[in-house]
Amino acid sequence: MTRGFLAQNPSILWFIGLLGLFTLGVTVLSEAYGTAVLSTSFVKTLGKTLCLCLVAIAMDVVWGYCGILSLGHFAFFGIGGYAIGMWLMYARTEAIVTENLAAAVIPPTEAEVSDAIASQIFGVVGASEFPAIWAFAHSLPLQLAMVVLVPGLLALVFGWLAFRSRVTGVYLSILTQAMTLALSLYLFQNDSGLRGNNGLSGLQNIPGFEATPQSQISIAFFWASALALALGYVLFAWVVSGKMGSVIRAIRDDEARVRFLGYHVESYKLFVFTLTAVVSGIAGALYYPQAGIINPAEIAPIASIYLAVWVAIGGRGRLYGAVLGTVFVTLLSSWFTGGGAPDIDLGIYTIQWTDWWLVLLGLSFVAVTLFAPQGLGGLVDKLVRKS
Image (tube, rainbow, N blue to C red):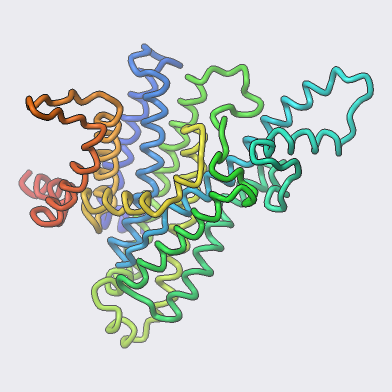
C-alpha cells in the first residue's frame, strides 16, 4: 500500500528530501548554531514563507483539485494566529504582572492579578475586563485546541450552508469573500475582544523562554514550520490520491455528472473545505509568533486573493506548484518591497519598486494566466519529461 501511494506521488520523496536539505542548510548558516551567514530576521522570513507554503497547498487542494475558488482561507489562517496569540499575550503579561506585584506588602489575590492582566492587555482600547472569548487564554493546551476547532467549525458551518444550497462558481467565491470581509470588519472594532486595530503584539516573546536568544527561537519555529509543511504535503498527497482524489477531481471537472453517478458531492466538498481550513489555522499558529504581531488587516480579503495568485503562478493541481509559486512571489516581494531592488531612473520618472511591486505582481498573474496556465509547476513537469 505504501509503495502504491509513493508510486502515485513520486514528488513526495523529492519534496521531503529537498525540504530536509534546505532546513539543515539554513540551520548551519544561521546565527544560532552555525556561521551566522543568515540573519535572525531572514531566518524568520524563511520560516514564515514555509507557513505560507502550507496554507498555499491547502488552497491548491480546495481550488486546484476540488474546483472551489475560496477567497476566505486566509481568514482561517488568521484565526489560528489569533488563537495562539491570545495565549502568548496572556502568559507573557501574567509573568510581568506577577513579578511587579510580588514586591507588594500584601500578596495580591487571584482576582487582583487577573484584573491587572486584563488592564495591561485591554487598556489600549479603554477596557479592563477579559471578554468571554478569552476564557481559555490561560491554558496553552486549550488554545492549541482552538487553533484547530475554531477554523474547523467555522468552515464546517459555512460549507454546510453553502454546499447544501448548491452554491457554486463565482457565487461561492463571493460568499467566501463576504465571510472574510465580515470577520475582518468585526475584528477592527475595539469591542471585538481582540484589541481592534491594535491586534495582538509581542508574540515573538515566548513565555518561559525569555532568556533564550531570538536566534535560537527563530530556528525552533523554522524547524516546526518545516515539519508542518512536510506533514501537510504528505497528508494532502494522500487526500488527492486513489479513489478519493479521483472523485475530487471529477467534482472539479463535472460536478453534475459526479452527482448523477451517485456520489454525495456535498460531503466530499465539505470534507475538503473543512480539512484545508484546519490546516490553514495550524499554519497561522506557526506564522504569527515568527511575525510578532497580528491585526485584522491580516484577515482582509486581499490576503486571500494573494493566496490565489500564488497558487495560480505556481500551477493549480500540483502540490509542489503551490509551494513554488508561494516561495517565488513572497521572497521576490520581500526583495522588491524591502529595498533590495534598485530604483530605475528613467530621467523624467523614477521607478520605485516599493510602489510598483503590486503592479508587477498583477502583470505576472495576467501573463501566467494567458501564456503559461500550468504555472511554474508546468515548467517543472516539462523539464522532468525531457530529462
